[in-house]
Length: 358
Ligand code: CA
Image (cartoon, rainbow, N blue to C red):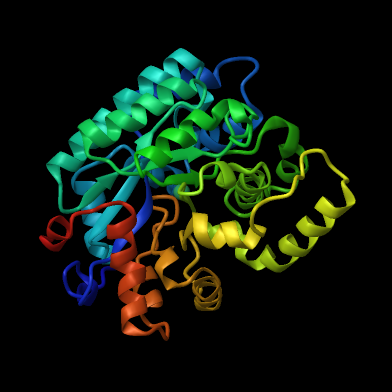
């Protein structure tokens, strides 16, 4: 079913979807090899092991869409009323690979994506994939992505082999991201082995709940480790309505202050600002997978309308009616335009002339 009234170019603003995934077929070859290893990560097996082998209609559809950077994807965007996608290498990207493979494959994937953007410059923009396994190379790839590929954001799929970016050994990545003015989209990954068991036995480890819990934890670890005191201009993007963190803000502030006062943990140190201040000043939030007016309104009230962006989460949550659902919400015209277009153009440095040419 298509919605002809929603065709791209039919609204007074552009609809830019900002958490959309792709996967070069070469990455699937690497994944297939990893999946045959005896010690394969349980979360990776639960996530990509499922999508790559399930005969279900949903899994097959997702795999078909992921590898396409041309007419399949553009046809789906047209049908759903999406003018432009900001595209990232799908989770876990290179972060499940060994260091050398991850470093070289990140470059390959970024080149592939840049080619796709060159073929369809009014429909696609890209995020830079990096290998946190090698922070020095990751920093170099951010520079190459900006200077040579014309991309202005970075995607990192949460933890890397169970390690979090709150560890200072990774902070060279933040230094480069801050210097190059590239926001980092902190996208979910499958949970690390030490965390997943109680979720997986209940079937709750994936996008239904586990992703949000683990990625929200990662974001909080960045805050409590003092990342934003050290890199005050750094911007992090969270999907899925901020992985619910806006709803936690009040208690985070109270309990963080109480924990600092009681000296309970060496890892909880005084910060320059309150946790909620960092959320409002160092984060942007997309509504990927959450086309729900009450949650969106609360998040816009908490973050301010300039920090909340539209995202679909294609192809994992490809919902034809989504744009229509969102456009039926009671939202001031300038807030709607900021949500669908202006915030994305500003944050991802999409030239207005480029996106206006749809
Ligand atoms: Ca996603």
